[in-house]
Image 1 (cartoon, rainbow, N blue to C red):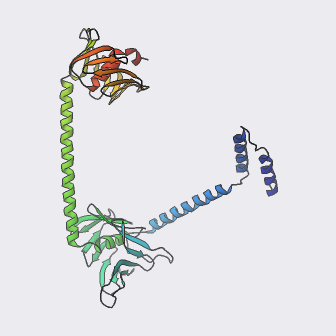
Image 2: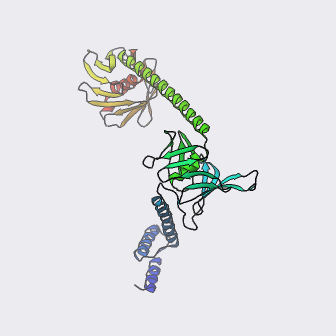
Image 3: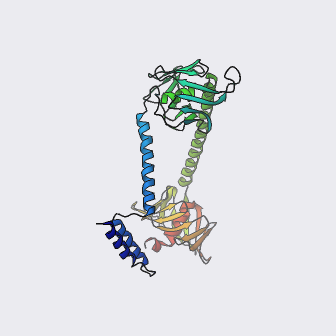
Length: 372
């Protein structure tokens, strides 16, 4: 179809756009016609271009990641951006030039012939030797995972596990972007590099044996404190569970009508009896309410009471009973059940709890609502 014909068809469709209640319908027709002709609005073009650019960037980053191996870094193509090196992922302490294979620290020489100049480390991509701009060797990276630093000594990186070892003990991990020592994130690159470089730059070049020992000691202390907290929580949980077990084991209450006539009982562990002491159901510690045949007829979950189909029947906050629509249908006060008009409709006596009160109010006094 010629372009002039497309324009004519769009103009023809546009003639129908008027301010009427059907305007939205015509707008949809026009939009559909435009889409069918393959013509896009400026906004659609911008969105499509933005999506393509975002995907290109994701693909570019993934291509870089896929190209990285746990080996000595090699010079990147000219124009590859310089990366920031961040202490604990926050404070910039240096930059990494992947083209020149140089680390430039945010620190200057204070004396000597390089006084006032930035401290730099330069990597030889063939030998793996790292020298400062003063000419002295400050470390060495090997493809077998051995990393030597003048500050920390010899480290070993395991490419299969990302673990970093020092003096035969695992002290941390290194990935393409960050390195950790025990529990602490030592630093990060804001790009992807060989994990041998992250090990050298973020652990070997920054930490001393004393600092590693201090971080380890802090890790041990934190682990001990965590273990103590968990043990305390375990004991408290066990105490609560034991208290609940005893509470349910000691249940023994009588449910009465307003005139004092017994309607039923709740015995130990939630066994529900009628006035003739025949078991008619069960109130479980987990809030499940069952009939005498152990078929579930409802639930009490916190302050919510539900039917067997999980439809909310009502609520009980310890004082006020509400229907599912939040309209007050009754009150509870010191063993007395009251209707919404404050007229007493029943009483409790003996040992009971929140779950028993909620279950008995709805399932003893309003059984018709339960079965609706």
